[in-house]
Length: 103
Image 1: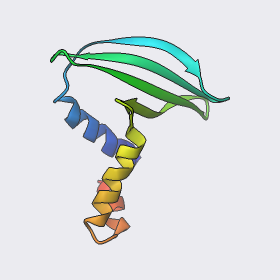
Image 2: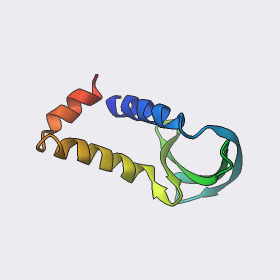
Image 3: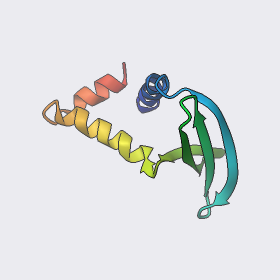
């Protein structure tokens, strides 16, 4: 829950810098037995266009977003980098990360 809350706050803050004008949802593609990807195009107010590939995996009773790739960069790896950087700036104290995520 702490990770989900952190990521929601992080992306909400970042989204202010990338106002979306419109988006287009592409076709879904089966990727393995319990995984689906959906390619979308996001058109920003600035005129920039990005392809975002969403990965959904079957979790419990439905599909959940497990990754998004923007310009080929995985958000899972970006998130891991944020957490790794946070911990290393605190001399490897993972407890501080856990405490920060549970605020």
